[in-house]
Image (tube, rainbow, N blue to C red; front, side, top):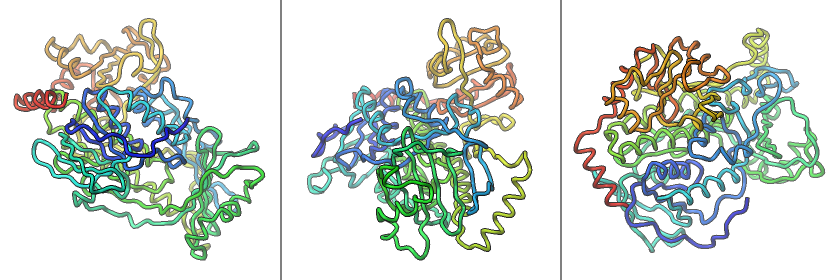
Length: 545
């Protein structure tokens, strides 16, 4: 895919929009797409005049692909992603002698209908997302514009921006909401004075992306070489590409680590040389685990790296940002449409913060294992990990599956609430495919015992459909056939017969088939907008249309 020539800033944004998104990376672009699809007028401002042409994130999981599916991206672009393969689950930890210490099952059957873990090339994904954004009614992308300042009141946010490099040429934009998806050094977060928590983990690593010129044979999708002489990572980074990462040792300066010659020297033991590979990029990064103390101030929200930062050892950084986008946009869409009280926005930060903190903690724990430089401590580590891996049941572990943080917009359901809901292949009439494509995404009310609609009164049924709800009977006698048994397995695992899932694919409630009216009643109560909320929605829609 080619990058459009754009030497200067795009035209200034409209003076009034429903939402201003600061940051035009994957998280900001996806946020804009989903809000535009929900009927909002959205402007994205990005300080860089052109997309970054080199890879950064390179792994993405099943849940993130389901989110991209909801945005309409996967139908034509599933080939951007290369599923994890390899022995022992595809993710290995090995010591300096090459012995297996631990494995994570990245090849497991995933809940979301897509491969559990995938490699991809970020410039290609960003190009597709930006094309999708500019083709979505109501969405405009303005490159070459820098965020400067904001003021807010109860009704919205007033924002000052300027062409990048020309801060005196300010323009003001008024928006009901602002989303700061502007990266780890977020100017939006800084302007709000939001503090950042720190895990205490910090390590400099050289990241090297290359294209193999010869066929390579790797036993795993990701291998962590826990060698105290030189910790390293090898990973499949998308179709036709690979990545190495090397930790900086104390006897190497950052400047030395960043040299071409250093990259070639460190890759040479694996047979990666100028004769066998084309070097695409090499850069030194400092891996950290950090998080914003709050994700919301009034009408301003943080998402992506502006809200959280984690070492890349679990491949979850971008995935977490895409989850942020989905969790926030369905809420904003309902509030904008007068279908929910603004109070639903209160749970965005706590839910996402609790979820991502668990992933950060696990990524930091993996980093502390990988980054051990003391040979004696590494030997003790290796002995313990080999002893544990000798148990066939413990040798390959599951990746983390966090629950939403609290307080959450869920109904207590014996542990199933706040967990990821499944998506399987189904048949409905003459259509066959993944559930979201065949039946519909959004709110999903699904039962293995009978038709959920038969238990709902006319008013509840009409309301549920008005918020974008879909209903399915996957019992075998209904109109939706569970082709691979994905729903049957999920219901059995969670000891229930029905669930109500949210648009971000997390379970609102689960239980018996006869509990369905209670699910819908509690959801109505949780979302219920006041007459004032509905009136404000009409005013705001009229003011920006």
